[in-house]
Length: 403
Image 1 (cartoon, rainbow, N blue to C red):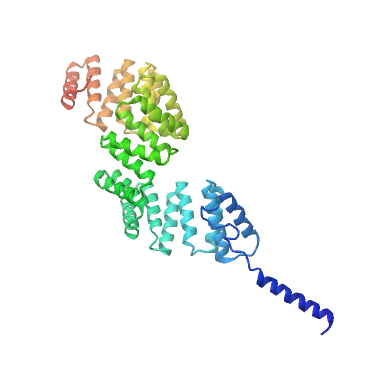
Image 2 (cartoon, rainbow, N blue to C red):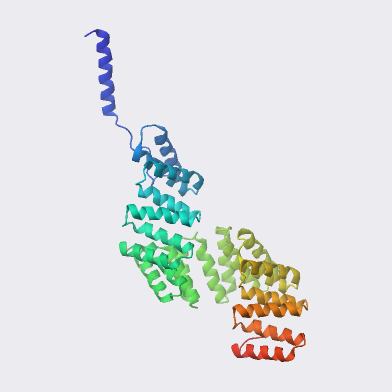
């Protein structure tokens, strides 16, 4: 063998030995795991290194894209996450994990049809995936398909009886269907399975509050806040419970804290507006409704409440404009019709006032206040017999009506 050829051969052997001694890095070696044990910025960097290395293909490359997408999504960057999930699925159409992650991202984007399609694929690939059934239920519920959502939640719980999240979600579904007893049983089960489940305490507290048991509600909100002092929703709901107890100082303190924690919560601003209205602090009520409407322009209740504050300040034209918008958003909003009727009555536009009170009664035939006010306006408009009949009917519906 010539000396030069020997050197080439020796170099080849050395390279082979080096390769044997230095195997290709795994995705974990790149910190590209898709798990929360490693910071998401580091995972994005590590997954990008793995993808850019050219060393991975097929399912491994798909996993790198999927894991990077998960890291982006966890940072709230769905603009970068979605293309990664798409690429992962293109490389490995059998990856239930990639479909599940993309479906969850679609849920966040409120693209419920696409979310359902992805969870369908997950379930097709892995029929025992309880999380996919739970998440598909969330998408179906968001579309108003409560019955099919319940079927999915039942299946998730059948597959995993210890799945506390599915228990709480089924409780929410039962509550939406008006079955408070079953809802309470599911919330109790969720808390028993996970005694630190903040949202389960919050949901059970709301159920108690709706049942009129404000003390139990507050106890559950207290527990939620103790477990997570940054959970704004528990402050919002505890504030509402205090409002129902007419403990307005505690209510305001809670709602102030909720707004500090989550200034983008239209509900927090709206609930604080309610306290200001009860206290007849109409300027502050209007300011809070301004914030709620800016954050959620389709919030009919906020338009109504701001209109009511303007009504109490005798600014009838602004009040009517706000009630107009509340009714446009919700054409069956009986309270807004009643309030607009009162605004027209103050302007002595009795025909429009009577028409609005009549609309309020069309949607709520037992609305004693609207019936009483229509009676008064009929009297003012010269229809004493019709007015007397309305007032008598209102008294029959509600003998304790203050007016």
